[in-house]
Image (cartoon, rainbow, N blue to C red):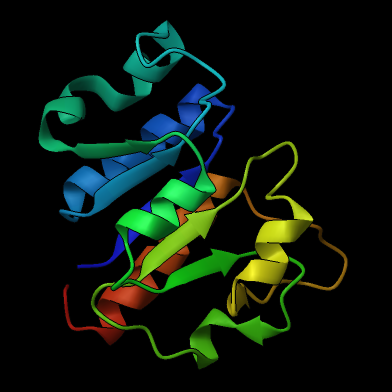
Length: 149
């Protein structure tokens, strides 16, 4: 099953929106700590509503632990720095789509460590999409390709 991983998320509303996406499509959510807010944050709860009970969150102390505990999965980094479009990539059933922080993305060492780095093609005069929008587009494409929706 496709899953979503967030690297040190720092905006509660975006994390809640992505978790709601995961609940609606039966995806696992991986959170690489530290999380920049408490999961009891009112901004988080307002967006997640009752979907928190339909979601699975797996928390990791760091990126290395995510890798160690998911050896059979490919980690696919979504980044504006990638050259390859997600629409030209062949997703597999157990892929984990990794999204960086809204404020900083992921560190350079993670970019260098991961073989699969993808982008969503956008207009030339724009910088980036919101992380929740990126999660939705990339999850939908991965699920479509793997016939999971």
